Length: 155
Length: 163
Image 1 (cartoon, rainbow over the protein chains, first blue to last red):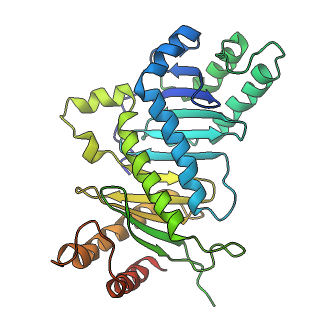
Image 2: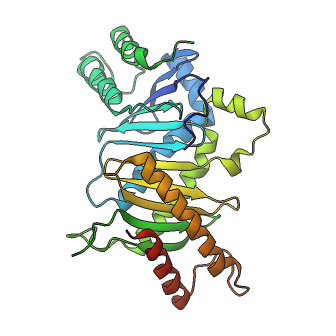
Image 3: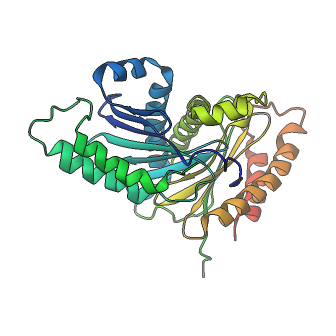
C-alpha cells in the first residue's frame, strides 16, 4: 500500500449522507463547501458521480453479505489506489459516506458514529423535520464542522 | 489438532466479471449454516466486478486532477486494493489484463502486514495461474477449468495459502 502517495493533498475530500433510496440529503465537499439546499441537491443528483457513489455502497453491502458467516455490521471501508471510501450504514437506510486520502491512517469509524448520533438527536428527533428534506439545521452543521475540524489538514 | 486458518476463501474473477475459480480454504467457517454455494459466489464476484469498475468514476476531483496530467489510464490502474468489514478483510490483486484475484481472510492480525502478505502470495498464484490457463492451448481464457485440472490448481492454491 502506497501510503506516502498523496501527502501534499488534503486529508478529507467529501462527506455524503443518503437517506432511503438515492435520496441525497447532505453533501460536503471539504474544499468547496456544504450543499444542503434543495435546488443545489437536485443539480448534484443529475451528475452521474453521486448515483455511482450510491451504487457502490449498495453493491458493497451485497458483496459483504455473501462471505460473512455472521450478520453484517454497519461499518466498512475500502482502499483503492487513489482514495479511501468509508461508509457507516444503518438499517433505517441512512448511509454516511466519507471519501478521504489514502495516506491518512486514521480510522473514521468513531467519527462517523458521532455524525450519526448527531443526526439522530438533532434531525430525526426534531418534530418539525420532514423525512427526505435536506439537512439544513444550523446546529447540525456546527456540530459536524466541529467533528471534522481536527482531521482536516491545515495547509 | 486443526491449525487456526487465517485465510477463508480464494476467488478469481475474469475480465468480464464472471467467476473463474473459487476455493473455500477454511472448512468449518460456517458451522451452523450451509456451506457457501457456487451461486452465491457467482453473484458476489459479479457484484465485485461492478463495484471495482464504478470506483474509477468516483475518484475525488483533487486526486483526479493530479493524476490526469500524467495521462493515466484510470480503467486499467484503478482497483480496490483492500476492503475491510468488521468480520473479515478482502485483499485484491488486479493484473494488467483485467483479471482479479481475491483473498478473503481474518482481520485479527495486523492489517497492512497481512495485506502485503496476501499480495505476495497472490503474485505467486498468478504465476501458477499462467501455467494452468495461459500456457494450455486448449484452455480458453474466460472459461473455468475442467475437473482434473481444477483439483490440481486447488491443491496448489491451498499449499500456498494455508498456514
